[in-house]
Image 1 (spheres, rainbow, N blue to C red):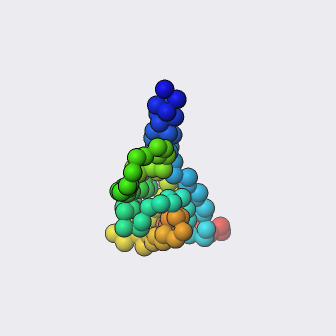
Image 2 (cartoon, rainbow, N blue to C red):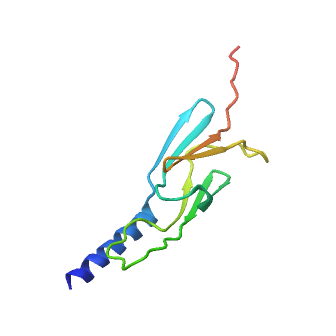
Image 3 (cartoon, one colour):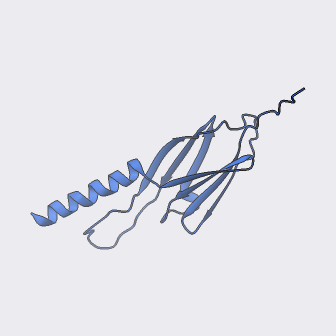
Length: 121
């Protein structure tokens, strides 16, 4: 009975992570928004990013090949997250967004629309 309860807690914990997380930090630097996303355990080939307007879509799926019986499984196998960015993104055909993945952290740099200065007479 205890084994079943622990297994169910592990499943719910992983489902929570897949739904709520991954943790995301956003920092406005000059004319860009820098977004850091914690995605440990995923390979960069398993991560797909899409920017549509100011909606950032993150999809990642990994396959776990396990020899033996799984006792406890909490780490997420898939992430499907859409994040509304708090700024206006350049909406031309080539927004020049870039992404790097290092040590389990995905870092995106997204150029933002810049306003126009208004001269005072």
